Image (cartoon, rainbow, N blue to C red; front, side, top):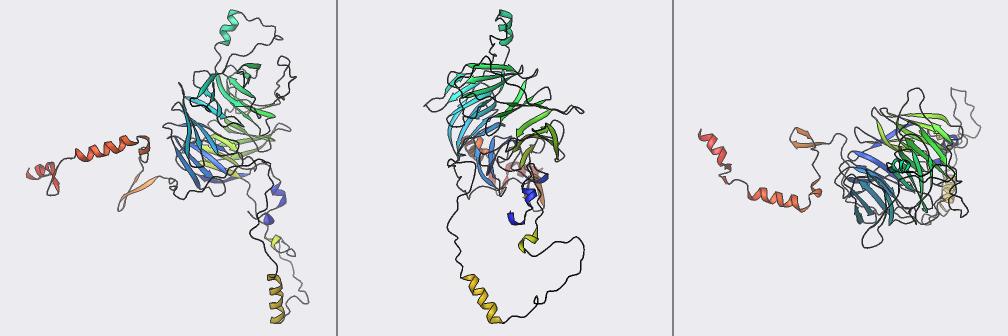
Length: 479
């Protein structure tokens, strides 16, 4: 993009306008941008993880290790490590420097969502299906799993006595989603009864609990600063909550208050929301709708709807906002394509010539007196040489101004990445014969050595051939 040709008013726009592109490599179920915003990780139905380059929309790396659908992805702070959770009851930590697995952790239930610690990539929290959430430390030779409580903490100010009936009700709570705070000292969990629990990372004890809604909490997401949180619940209401500063040592857990700032919902159609996310600055909230193909964008300053991004003719699942630009990506539930929304910026070619003016209709042009004068060739040649005498520095790299001050990881470029799957996934069988690619084709890596052994067995057990034809064919010819 040439910034000199872009209207400055368009550069100041904070939210995207229209659907501008789509990418695909298999059937994507979840996506996640890294903190720098130059890569987009995509988890597929078959367990493969594909990492796209945002600028070129090309595939930077493919990671194979899961055998079932990918549920969630989480990047480390420097962008070198990626945590993936799947329905195959496993979480894998990947090193993107060479694409190897750092650790593989297996649980006793499918994993809803897993989130890396913001400053320690060897510590993560996982929400499990019909099981207690776990805080996992993989720094040692064996993973250390610590159980996190789900029952809310009753404050002494509530005036509720802890009797047997209340204890039985609290025992029915189960955690649906878990995330870390911005500094990683606390864990925020949402339960199936609408309670929000804040857990201390060191002691794994609940320090504060509050009732957020009446239904179960589906999803939680913090802004980059960690000062605000958005929640998606089963009551079809999206809530934004300003988070208190939990790093202060004088905070009283009993008097701590967490209040809802805004409630976003579709009062007319009563739409449900599949996924929610914050914008790069935290000023906007975007959500994908259930049984609909639109993305709703609200602003938090007034709590009003500012834009409805029209999408393709299919329902959208996970939606993610670029961490630094007005750029939104979402994956379709039916086809698995990843759709991209951004700003369509018409280029102002008049910026190349300062004295050039764009007009809406024809005007009479007044020629200057010396505009078309013929200059001597020697004078033109001398002017050209004077311009060439200016030294142009093409080696020095100026540091780019960015909000990310710490060192970031740069993924090495691999030249042996196979091309992305085609949109129709059509393969040629023979001359003039085409067929659709089978669902299991290209997944021999899941079987490993077993597939090679089975191929050898097929070769050895093949019927003998006589004169280029099998015995069965000879019997048919005799008949």
